[in-house]
Amino acid sequence: MIPFLDLKNINAEYRAELINACTRVIDSGWYIQGNECKEFEKEFANYCGTKHAIGVANGLDALILILRAYKEMGIMSDGDEVIVPANTYIASILAISQNNLVPILVEPSLDTYLINPDEIEEKITPKTKAILPVHLYGQTCDMDKIVKIAKKYNLKIIEDSAQSHGAYFGYKRSGNLGDVSGFSFYPGKNLGALGDGGAVTTNDDELAQIIRALGNYGSHKKYENLYKGVNSRLDEIQSAMLRVKLSYLDKEIKNRREIANYYLQNIKNEKIILPFVRKEDNHVWHLFVIRTSKRDELQKYLSDNGIQTLIHYPIPPHKQNAYKEWNNKCYKVSEKIHHEVLSLPISGVQSLEDTKKIVNIINEY
Ligand SMILES: *Cc1c(COP(=O)(O)O)cnc(C)c1O
Image 1 (spheres, rainbow, N blue to C red):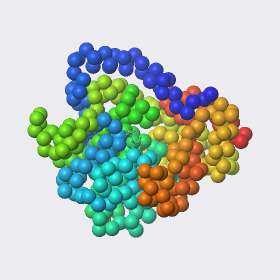
Image 2: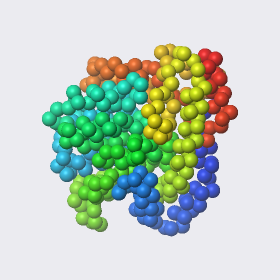
Image 3: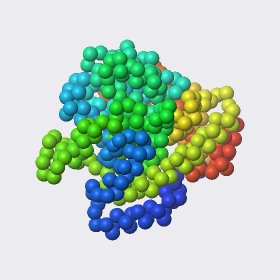
Image 4: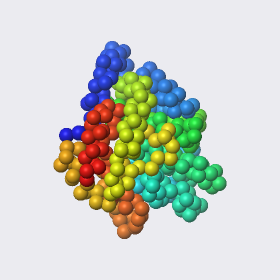
């Protein structure tokens, strides 16, 4: 079976360095809020091109803390609205509802699967405070249009960069394309820890300071609490793992691009719609997503032929039990996408041999 994602093999490449880094932390006697996290934050901010990076416990917390900080700053309050794509992974939407803010779903474009910028403006009301673009599958959203709308209506832009570490838009990278950005280092992400992890990046000094305090019991200074904060920190072991992985991220992206380009050039089957790529460096191929009307049939065919695939995602957020209040709403494009997409295996360690085999089997379908 060709696995969808072989995490063991991915981390095996760096085994010796990971063990060294882990040993360094064990022997340091310092496990939370130490030098490793500080250094990783510097290196990651530098990679994204931002002034600040703040390590947090996971990607969901990164987004929750960003919105919470804007509330502490008086920029948002209960009941305000945040615009978000209807086909995102549900975490982007949960971060909004958990802050007593209202998610306003906007349909994606059927070609890119990214929020359709031409449908944002009609959803803006006096309560709208932010747009939360999600660079889904690893491709950056059309930020020229989104920034223009945000400026016109004085809205914040909060990027969800959980799938797009290293992706460019123009000469800037994901994480530096709006006011602030949330990242996830879940093990399967392009930059993955060996456990949970996340970060916030921003150029805004005040926002950075508040987010750092909020993730540390609301404390900016030991035993003094400015806010009713939470505990959401990136620990020293995961920071050390991420420093190793970050140094190879560009190489991993290059390998993913080679596989994606091979798929793009060699999959030839009229039943299958290949992903649309705006510009090569805009896409880091967290997922290689194809579309076909008989998706479940194709998935079964591939599985019968030894290829594991996954669906990102099978049920749209507005049809989830968690959002019962939306269950009777209709987001046609999003529903079509959820019905038709299929993610092929792709990773920094996938062999050309496996990629060729996958292409041949798909072409025979
Ligand atoms: C993975 C992911 C998240 C959540 O990250 P976690 O670290 O798993 O909490 C948020 N948004 C998107 C788009 C994701 O893919």
